[in-house]
Image 1 (cartoon, rainbow, N blue to C red):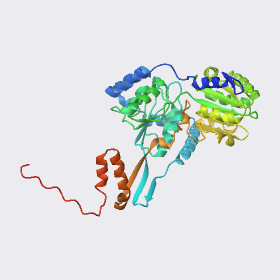
Image 2: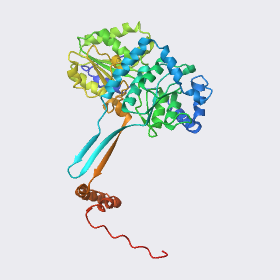
Image 3: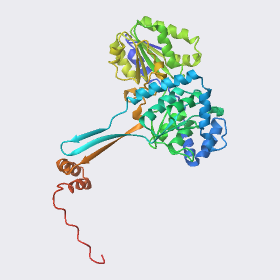
Image 4: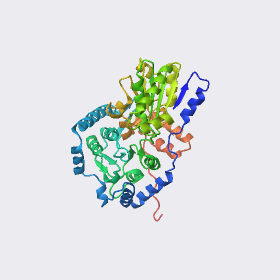
Amino acid sequence: MIRLSTADAGFEAGFRALLDSARETTAKVDAAVAGIIAAVREQGDAALLEMTARYDRWQPATAAALRVTEAEIDAARAACAPELLDALDLAATRIERFHAAQLPRDVELDDPLGLTLGLRWGAIDAVGLYVPGGKAAYPSSVLMNAIPARVAGVPRIAICVPTPDGALNNLVLAAAHRAGVTEIWRVGGAQAIAALAWGTESIAAVDRVAGPGNAYVAEAKRQVFGRVGIDSIAGPSEVVVLADASQNPRLIAMDLLAQAEHDESAQSILITTSAQMANAVEHAVEEALLSLPRAAIAGESWRRHGAVIVVRDWEEGAALTDRLAPEHLQVMVSDPAALFARIRHAGAAFLGPHCPEALGDYIAGPNHVLPTGRTARFASGLSVFDFLKRTTWVSAEARGLDAIGPAAVALAEAEGLTAHARSIAMRLGQNAAPAAPPASPPDGA
């Protein structure tokens, strides 16, 4: 774990090293992924069947068996504890409400010169969502990815989920049902991304792919981008907690470990104005690790990538936070709203001691699919906008063309695009007498 203080002479060098530290896997999987994608493109369902047997250790009899049936979904829901289904429903209802509030309105602007300008929003036709199913399965991610797509109006929502040894996760299927998913496929890894992007005999291609996955899934999304849209190339999870001396160090420690337990590459950072708080949190983290079931993972993350930074004031703290541009930001100070107002770059923020980031992972309502690796400087979390597209339109009367057309002609001629200029110029002066038709060619010409 790194301990830094802005009062130290070597702080800037230490902080830059923290910013530049690599948390991604060093394994190169681009060539392997390219081979998988090529196999799916060339062999379709046959490649999916072979790879499912090889990687997931179960052999479907036919490609039709890759699709999860309605009966299986019903059985999965019936097997879930009622209180878990109630929790899913509450989360889904809150996520729906928040994302419905994001829906934009079409634009229509009447131009006094005689034109009408417009912008029309429309949903993507089909999206494919990847749901992890290997080391961990996350029903919450199903809700967070599928519900915005449904709220946006996407008519076809397909999910691909790996099923190691043929086992289905009941709560994942229940979440997919609640979120309005239209089809579920037992396909994982890079081959699932390839199938969604290019299509096979059984799985129709989609227009956008979203959802988290391992290094192979991330690389596959990178390689199919352009053929389809993607949400992002997500990296390890991260949190920055801003806390003053009035906060409970044990709560802060648990908030840091809530990120650290995701995986060994996750990063948890505390920024505080109190050296005593920094010491207390470090001690509380070590104490909490003694009883945490995922202590091995969380401890490795904290030791390799964790940091505690002591600042002289919150002006420094806000500036450092903007440089970190964290995926998650917790603001635990006496006036969290005022401090948050000074911070520009964060994927999602959680204000006050009663609002841990984990609340946002499940049930608060805003999306938990967020920009990682400092990309919050220019990127945003998943929303309905990821499943919508814009089309602009223009309608012009003759007087509108006459008013602005000459300027367009001048610009086209300046760019050397004569046909552009003529396509406008030939329409100018619509009330003028039409030009005489060209003479008929002589007989036999």
